[in-house]
Length: 183
Figure 1 (cartoon, helix red, strand yellow):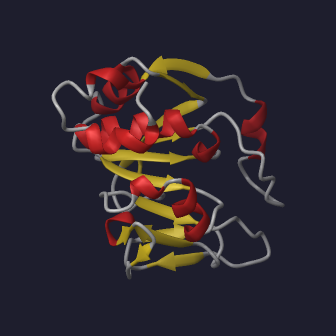
Figure 2 (cartoon, rainbow, N blue to C red):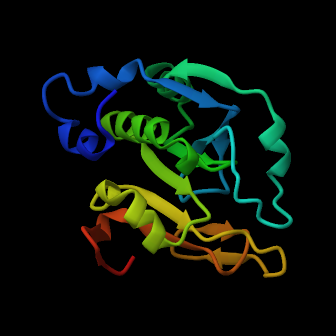
């Protein structure tokens, strides 16, 4: 497994991708052909835990589910077997609690030219402090915790309905080393 700070930079170096193909990924489920969670048709890969406990979270029961283990390559190969999938959606629970596994999936998905959407309860500021190396890359991130008392919000730019109107989608291509651009 590569150091996560260096992995994306090393991605296109000869054989760099070989080092993460065998990384072990823990996940609850892979759902194919998801139309509602991203501005593309994708496979939603559910992480194994979320300790944030948003009141009214509709994924809370997933914290009790058994999980699967596969290599990064096996997970991405499963997604590619379904031609309807244009990318990966890291959602369901929270992948920020599995940062190395999240990074392996992101890097291999980028290598395989898949689109990427990450869901997190973090604000964009906290996400960028935790994962600054994702800035400048073709990755979308939905930030903001679910608030059951707020109405849903339709983000027309990305054609996605967000669970509560405090949430926002950011295009990481416009985020570089603490310089936040407009998305």
